[in-house]
Amino acid sequence: MGGSAALMADAVRWGDLLFLSGRAAVDPGTGKVGGDDFETQARVVLDDIFAVLAAAGSEPAQVLRVECWLADAADFATWNNLFVSMFPEPRPARTTLVAAFPLPKLLIEVQVTAGVSS
Image (tube, rainbow, N blue to C red; front, top):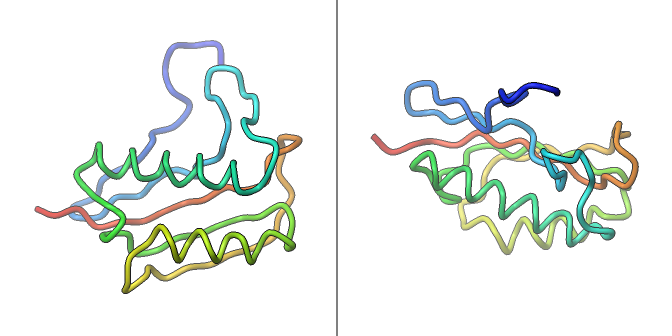
């Protein structure tokens, strides 16, 4: 922080693969978590992921792998429902873990690997 350069890239492309940095419902300018409940944060994260994919020439149907960290295992069913509604079949490979986050009130972080059409 302190400089004008971003701490990390939104995504890095390697050939026809796109690796997104972890996405969370955090304002990069203030570091504040947005949304008080899991579903709100998860939707913000997914919308952000889809915007990064689109900017890089990809889309949800080209997502190959989703890695998700939840603050609370009780949110797993809601995450499953959102995942099914947002990613078309065949759905991407996925890992979901429960973890502690460095920011209070943060409930979800998601990292994605996607293909990019040539």
